[in-house]
Image (cartoon, rainbow, N blue to C red):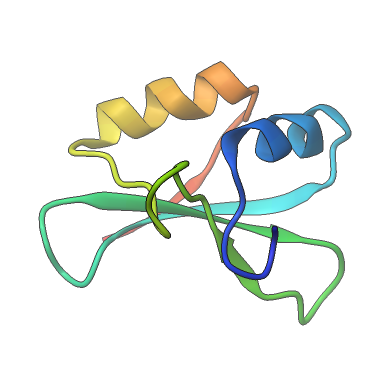
Length: 82
């Protein structure tokens, strides 16, 4: 479901179809963990967070871990908000 977040399997398919317009990595609520959001479609499209099977938001403890995840789903790059 895209409204509440996007699961890894759906993200992988969207990346393969070149449907992901942008990918943004940012800290969650200013804490130590990182989250990933994607934007689909044209201008005005909203950011959709990547979620885990159990949680509304999937988090990573480092940018290296985010990079490994992004590589595993086929992303070619992402922006990081510091």
